[in-house]
Image (cartoon, rainbow, N blue to C red):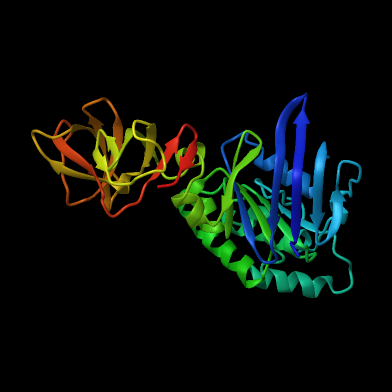
Length: 347
């Protein structure tokens, strides 16, 4: 049985739909990442599960109990859902131990708080005040407080957004390890694709209040069902093409994939930087118009003869100056996703 079940959730503010027909299940011990741009409805979906917002329509079950269905609205404190907010929401006037133990019954509270601080890697820091902690330590306190009442599901709303880049990467790793070690079921909201792909056992990509695709991180990244998903994940370029009997003719040459479409059909191909090979060639089909050094590699921007722009990931040992004429081609080892309109088509 799913720990969290959401069916056809709808919510509008001032007659403007924010969540429109959202459905998904979260299995016991699974981390679901809700991913999407600002305003797509992901945080509102989380708040509907938590009980901070009331459904306009649909159904939410937590651990087999209906907590909301348009008529029923179980209050947040009775939903057995732990919450970690974007700003942590730690009480500044309470010690670390008092924050973690807030709301727990007195019986066994001391032991539970000590156990949770040990679990999140903060043993012996119970007497400290929040202002005496680093950002990462405050994040751990917020996590310990959310987990202390033994919730059925943990809800995390952009929990790392206030941390610097290095600490953010460290906290992702630590929090995911903690959740997995504790067998915690979680729904994790983020707008950061790298974060979603790292944190989630499953990723649900949201757009304009709807889920465009849900699946494993690998599936969603490599097999996007819609152009929006392909565009949102992976620094994707779109190359125009025309279906022929032997493949798809494009400004990058022939793509030897044969979609189930009649010859002459116009398509677009989702192309990421690792899909494009470059060789300096005075008679080539493109020219380097920009380059970005990222340490282990260069990302080259190439403008093709027809004006199409693609990007290519190349080793730091490949040095191509801006203005260099190049021959840009597909990497033959990669199978690419084609779109007819906004929807992916199978080769």
